[in-house]
Image (cartoon, rainbow, N blue to C red; front, top):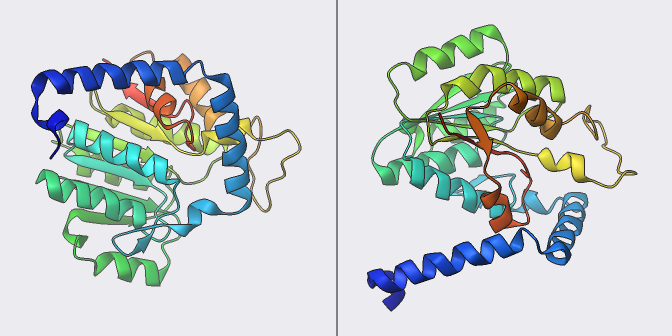
Length: 251
């Protein structure tokens, strides 16, 4: 443990320095443009497909994974709701953080839960903190199941990372946004689709510019003034799949 970490005054100075540095990043056009260009190249090369968490593939930018664990540690939720399970790395990451905190459960929702992925998740050492629901995240039955499981939970955090069309994400925000507790977050991934070059073509995907999670966030925020976009997180990360996607409930 370093001197900075053990000295209160030094820690305060460090936090102030960090805050100022992040605020400077917000206006660092050259650095931000470089980060945006790098992210587009990373997508083309499937860079985010190279990582795992405790043995399960996790299709996320490492920077976003850092942000997720910071948010979980800060909020210390009783319940995390995640849409989009895939190989299970993200739900395992959430479960591992809850295990360290000492309480809580993560619900993983996916429309197509592959058998080998389900087996790997359900036999993982952290399986006791995970509940899987197979079905569309916006189906009424799925939403009602989640609401029942959320009953009595005082701190709830939501991660949205399934179908990335405007209509689908807007429906997810309407369904799960109200569950989020004050000072917690709903994090909407892949809002960066709106920032990709004009000539970028998605292969076998129904989303693109004008029809993606970010446009859904912009529309949803118009009628949900009890949430604000926490840009300090993306200013810190710079390379993130979720610009405008860290939505903090303020009231």
